[in-house]
Image 1: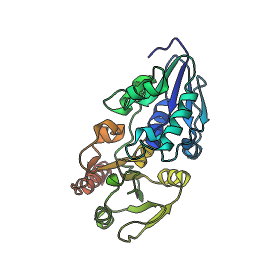
Image 2 (image 1 turned 30 degrees about the vertical axis):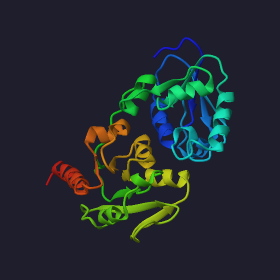
Image 3 (image 1 turned 30 degrees about the horizontal axis):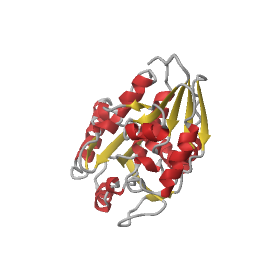
Image 4 (image 1 turned 180 degrees about the horizontal axis):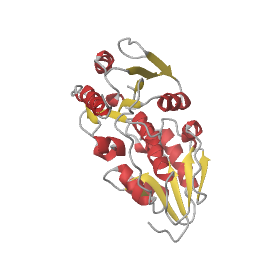
Length: 291
């Protein structure tokens, strides 16, 4: 994608949106430059990520839009008709008074956003798979996905059940089933809860309180199991094999490149797909070892 004028990209949505963008930006090969304007609520996440040197053609800065609920309230249903939403939009309108093309992450509510901002606003992601959209936009170099699981023992499996959306959080009964499943020899499972344990008590559990702690846990793991949430995209960014559980249907729009390549996903109601996946991967490893 070519840009003849100054380009400014605003990141005002969720942490997951930023992780997908960061995944593409690390290997961007586009011939144009851009300023990346990030809402200040995303700054703690950026500080927690491993140090990454982006191409000098990208300049980024943080602006305080007074975001209170993890993303611009304009993109929510619960907080749309609130005074806080109006304040955030006013701050965003002032910040968007720049020359050249302006982009936001996604197409949702873009038409209304243009009216409220009083200017044309384009979207990086216009539909389809979000990783594919960012790859095209930044002309990202292809990346070979890691193997299904690493051929090593012990293998550290990390379960992260939580999600910002309650309906995506793994039910306590499913967490317990994963805890109780028969794992291949040499696979150690740890469950990481955000801030406090929820549901039935489980063994081998840790509690994390911020992005830095979650990043460290994912970096130390060999494979991650999570719902369709931030943790899955963090695993993709950090090059970790992962399995994604979906509550009702597979969300192909947000399916990670690894999960797409290895079919490493299933529904809450299809728990058996996970142990089958792990056992199949383990058997593949064994078949390659001389007897």
